[in-house]
Length: 328
Image (tube, rainbow, N blue to C red; front, top):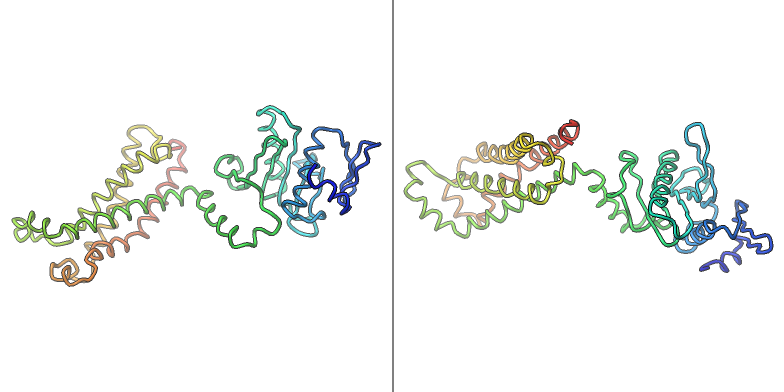
């Protein structure tokens, strides 16, 4: 077994083959060595020591966990602090070759211990099967979005790479926020693209609209509203294609239509209002448009001012739909 000889030399374990026992130090827990489940537990204990670099005094095997009025035993409990008072990782070990159902039961058992101890991670292993999770206590039943490749190494949470990964995972944990930012990003990209198109084909558009430009007092605010309208439409198509499993689009036909209507209004109205309420009376004039070094800013800047209102409104809509059972 990898690391075993090293652990014996370092006095982290004592193997007594005659008595068929393994003693885990420094906590002096004695277990039956030939037990198939114990083989997995010993291997995992050694990995925590030498692969994940946790000090032995932070790793306890067969640790009692109080659940309600009863007590159970977690196979391995890794603590965050030197005093072993702050549970960090729950490890459940099963013998190799178990069924997928038994393995899933072990996952649920690990999460029950995590909920009781407020631990941050669950690691379930049978040697040939592995599953690691970040525990989201506000969504304790989550088993998909919170699955991770491995548990953190000792003090890894202090590294900048770990900190960056955690910040990125924040959006996964808070799906409302990630959905909100995704919708806002899509419409912003559309605004950028269509603004560039309008600037590139400005003369052709002016030529096409010349009969109406003076008659209806058309200015670049009209083109801005057209860009916002088309961008809103494209973002709705995006939502229908790529977010069709979202609770916004799992309701009845009528509720879907209402959801689309609300989203369209949320995306369009703030952007439209920022264009109409522009404090610079010359902002939309042709002379100002041609004077700018970056003409597309004519359309981008008013839209950027509307983004905070859009984000807040979309967040509120998704949150409200999530509060109502008929939408979920």
